[in-house]
Length: 441
Ligand code: FCB
Image (cartoon, rainbow, N blue to C red; front, side):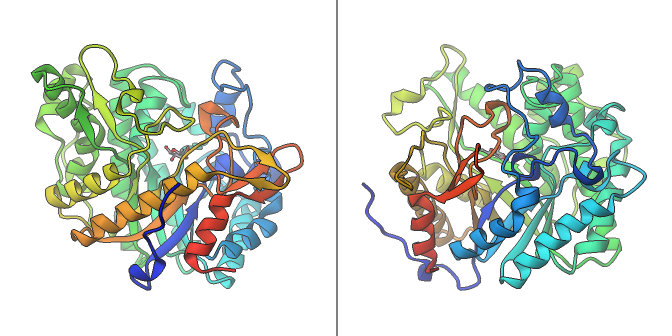
């Protein structure tokens, strides 16, 4: 059992306390009202790609159940909600016609949440790229940058008065590397050279979108969300130490350096050799736009080894259903390291959470491990703030159980349990804990 050591009043009054979701993982309604196909719709068609052979056709049916989900969000007592807009729902082909019905869905959702006093933190790309753009090369084709700018500026034109922040991309490392190098996420490509091109165009399109939105006079805070972890060498062997440094370069510095300092890290460029993407004159300055915030998604720490793969059980710490070590101190270490190495803008913890084997019994989900996880990571955030890291918000992943990408519905990350046959939502004990922490009803 954990001992409660944290209180909301220890944080600034305006601190953002939220829950997070993403469009493909919860909305369902994959063909409703003119929505186009996304690369994740396509990826799910191959039964080898998803652990339980499922797809996002229905997911949490949030597209239809959003009014009750808005009530549920408000009942938690959060003051902020992080969500994403499905590009193919509002522009089926990723270029050309806008789909008014798609925009209407988001407008209704946002208006309802706003009227309940909940801030809106919108992500433009949480992975569900229009398939029509993938057919033209997707994130590995430089031409996508202009299309993303048109999407971003149209969304900003329509909704900047409603939203409290706009994030361009969620976790470009995952999109590029898991999607284009390892091929275990959509679009399922296996080429390091293609993956590195995708990293460059994701970053470039981010910069171009920020510039364009600012030129429109958009005052809404603009930023990007990265998945970051501290990476340690698995041993004191110099080969492991070197590997950890390189992995940190590929995972963290490859994104932080260009975004905050305007260049790619030299050691990683040298390592990539012929897989280095083509960088045109002006690209680095374009990527290097002023950020109003940076979102950090933190789940666990990592170890690098040149020998046997590091065994997660060797630390004796709890391991989640994803096989990820529970290591809250890693969040403090990560945030303090970022603060030391970079001129940071405001930081939001845009995702943090854990999957466990939840059991619903007599209307109760006793997810004590998740309660402890949230408690300890919020305390770790507080430790980093005490050391001067400018953290302005914390979002629990996730509002409710949902489609966990290649793991399908087998991994449950929600504060709220979802029975997928009835779509009934049940607040887990972790939701009740968060509600109590936040002082809600
Ligand atoms: C992150 C994703 C999010 C969710 C969590 C568990 O990488 O951004 O959609 O799947 O992992």
